Image 1 (spheres, rainbow, N blue to C red):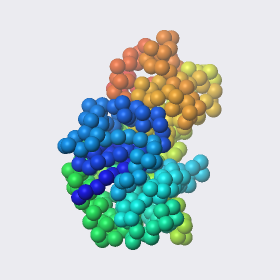
Image 2: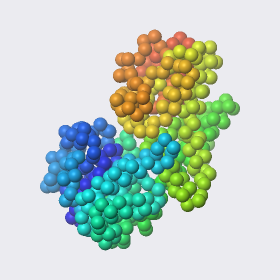
Image 3: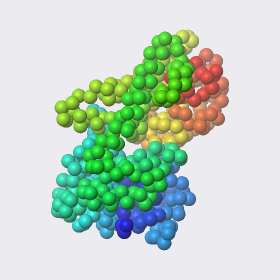
Image 4: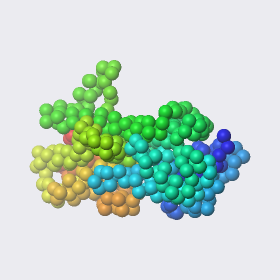
Length: 428
């Protein structure tokens, strides 16, 4: 298949995909962030999704192809014939879909869209969004007619940030197209780079729906065990002990309680419930699960406060250390981290909260959450903390001396059941 590909959006999803495409096709990566573009062209990926050696190999060209290039200039992408849009699709403060990045990217592509070009969307959306929202914008900007002048495909991303085993090429890919012929072309394109193979969905709407239910299903299952954690806490039973015992049955699903953040699980269900409401259905199970998961930060903070009170620790002005700010372990991604809920609740109690995360970018955290990060282990208090909360299980935290971190009378709470059980005062 002959193609020149432009990938729009060079984040956790777009960059790994663009690098893989560049080994087979002439490929350009486009992003509006000029700093990000400059760093990538120097072989530096701050998301840590693509190793410098692999990125530099792509930049220098592979298999006789021109070197992969990243750009923030529209002129560099106008001669492509396939555009893959991988921009984020977050939610707003009212937990409604925020399609502004998707709309902006679509309008951008419409300016360079030519006859017979294909626009493939990977961004998570609700079923029907591509044809209802994106296609009219492409038609308006390009003056071309859908399925006659240009075509569309939908192939939802399945990137798992920080996972070096389940990478873009090793995860089976759903593909679809706006016509049968386009679906075949999109499927063939991804089969070039996805070693795990593809699943061709019968329509773009089916592919869109498949993506949102993947993460909605996981969200509901985690909500169930989070609710169990709250119940078992009142019964003075260790939740992990219960799950380990129940897990001896062959068909018991191995989910664990925790803070549910990130750009997928904590966001995607709201896209599905938004569309459900638009067609007259009020979600019961999905939104119930979301409410449980959204309140886990408050539960964790209150549990720590209760443990402190039980030890006779003064709550107001207590020094509390929170370890971890990213949404998951060993990953720099801070998007939709629910650790902030723990921090805000502790602030409400009058605690002095300090946050340490060697994986997170301090400037990004300050901009996103208006809190400061310690610069690293060297900035930790020497006198000890009244409470230490292990919120994210970065392997670097295993190097810490928790005896020195803690005051003589203190609480150590393990959200992730990551530390040795005999050194913690409580765990989720």
